[in-house]
Length: 167
Image (tube, rainbow, N blue to C red; front, top):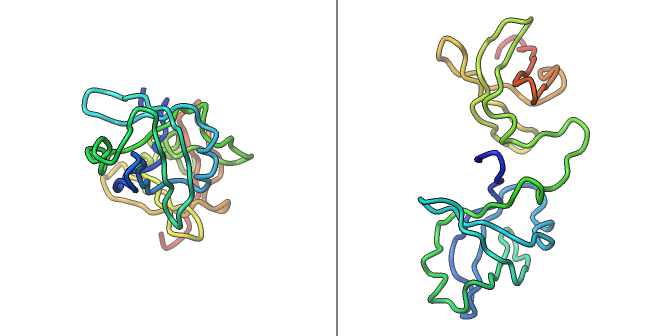
């Protein structure tokens, strides 16, 4: 189920009095969310569907309005809640691009020897960095560049890498 939903952001606070919320988005292209017909609020007991009724950009945040909430009082309880969309509503991938959720958990190999598991994808600006838990329990930070990432096989659950000297 987890891989069917993509986290798109976190609600930070209400905006105005008409039930709008400010959202701190994750991802490179929050503008595509204008076209999404359904979003989901993550709750302890599952995903709650929401119907977007308005979208605005505001600096590094987006402002969303949902049909299910009419005023500021109703959205107060949404602070710090995570918002999700379905996989099929995500931005389409280009060649050699992958969804983070598909990368995390891949077995990582160097020279056909398993060296660990990709635990997390970090972004430090210039490029992503893959946090790999080595089979001995230590951590390896590997830049997501062509010299290091040789092959990614999502369906096979495998990534082949070349660890540069000094890493």
